[in-house]
Image 1: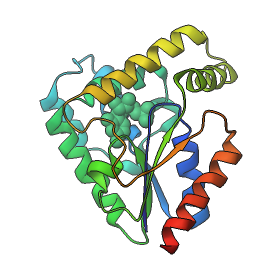
Image 2 (image 1 turned 90 degrees about the vertical axis):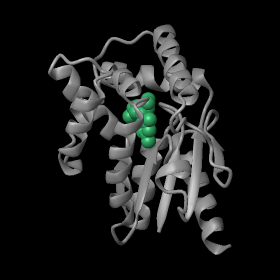
Image 3 (image 1 turned 45 degrees about the vertical axis):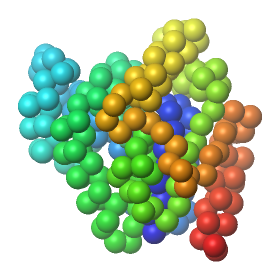
Length: 208
Ligand code: C5P
């Protein structure tokens, strides 16, 4: 079974993907980390984020098991990741790794922006998780504050909107709900309610 989960930043898709993977005993890949890992390596070497040749080289040597979520979750790495994510040949390299991960038994949950449309177009179930920009900015601000980081709601909101625009307006594999994906709007939901709603969708889809 392959479950594809897409949606914008801070929609709750990462937490949902992790919990769904645990529930169905599937492996989980947060594909955003692959773009973040490439961006972080370019930043660390002081190289321009548009250097596709080096970016591809980094992607070829990427070990999915060694991606450090704590380091890669930094705000500026997310911003840099969305800049490298416009590079078409780099995406091809990362999508190859992601497809290999998805196709290894017993199946997997992948979350990202183009899972239902590009990486796993034949997924058993596709979810598109969304929430209003304000709700997402509130969650992201609270999360940053809880980690002791400085965060101001209005600038977090501006950053999210800018990243949404870049991710959905790029020409290669833009963030988009697949035609056969189930839309889950979590604006008015806490994580428990959203998780139950996601499981209900998966169970219904499995029976049909
Ligand atoms: O999900 P996360 O915020 O970690 O993703 C960081 C960036 O990586 C996104 O803003 C997006 O530009 C890019 N990304 C992508 N395709 C994916 C996953 C992430 O383009 N499947």
